[in-house]
Image (cartoon, rainbow, N blue to C red; front, side, top):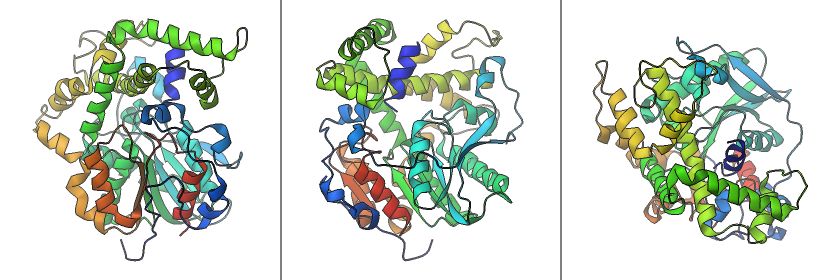
Amino acid sequence: MAGLLLLLALAGCATQGGPSVANSDTDASSSAGHATAGDHQVKPYPFKNALTATVLGTPDGLKAQLPKKANFSIRTLKPLVDRKTPPTLRYARPLQYLLAAQDHPAPLAFVIAGTGDSALSSKCVLLSRALYQVGYSVACLPSPTSVTFMLGAAKYPVPGRMKTDVADLYRMMQAVRDDLSGDVDITGYSLTGWSLGATQAAFLAKLDQQRGVFGFQHVLLLNPAVNVWDSVDRMDVLLKRNLPGGFDALPNFLAEVLGNIQQSEGQGQPLRFNEDVLYRAYENGTFDKKDIGAIVGLAFRLSLANMAFAADVITHSDVIVPENVKLGPYDSLGVYFRRSFRMSFSDYINQLLVPYWNRDGRHVSKSELISEADMHTIAPFLASDKHMAVFTNADDPILDADEVGFLRRTFGNRARIRPHGGHLGNLSYKKTIHALQDYFTQ
């Protein structure tokens, strides 16, 4: 199980006059400002296969150089909801966020984590370093799909309804602002997020336009899902296609992949998992396409399994854990993990999300839940908000061609769409980070 967690962790798997970004369809172009400082000499992003890019990320030599120290601290908030913590989920307390604070007056950038990620994830650290380097204080928040958020911040702890997940994030952002009062001198607010967190950032910006609490000066969406449920369905298909036998095939798959990586690195040497190790294994022919596809699908499925298990336990939904079973902190969870892992995204909607929103006096249809998580429903706002931009890749496996076209048409010159990079594979690439820094300093 530890091998699975390590391997999957690598997959990651308004007013006028706002900033703009380069609208690029070629890997050689870059935005102005920070992005022009030697970027024309940077080697092109190397991976042309979307799934390979998603898993391998960016080779070390092509990553942006960011400060080692960024005045990081982990801050704890009082729970935003009154909820007992089930004994088997005690590991996910307390409610925390990652702070990188300047020692002088500075704008604060909120970063919304992607599916299943906590505030301490590697991408939180990466984006915090990048923004801290150009003068921002940064607060990275956990995803509403993380167990920590479900326990401590979610009014409705079955993630997946965009409207309520975003409202919970907005409430947590205000709690962070209040927590920093007197400790950090904040001169303004900006917002970014990746993957699901990017989609949520778009809806957060719209909510803030209505409520006017923050008045975001910059909003940047990094590889967002356009229609969340269409995107997660694509991950289900990816897993089904590339891991025949599903969960039952998982032990053999991991043994083979991890064994091959160990062999490629050299017998008797400790196996250190990072993007460079995977890159060398890829160069040596350790992976085939099915391996890569399975790793991407497994990363998404593992996030779903954790979320589904926690949602079921917290709400006593009797889908994964029988209602009459009271799990303790040291009880074996093997049988429940298998049930959770076998649950597809469609199963999650039909067995957990829809039933939850149609009990205790609530009546919300499946079609309404799906529609609420579609950026098409706020297209006029996205097109008109000149303080918002999007970075993504034309080959992102969570998007189809029509959705890439939607982002290009809707954002116009505020869209930066590279041809290759998969899903967040080129996030740490020099040109990406420099363009991000350039955007946030306009």
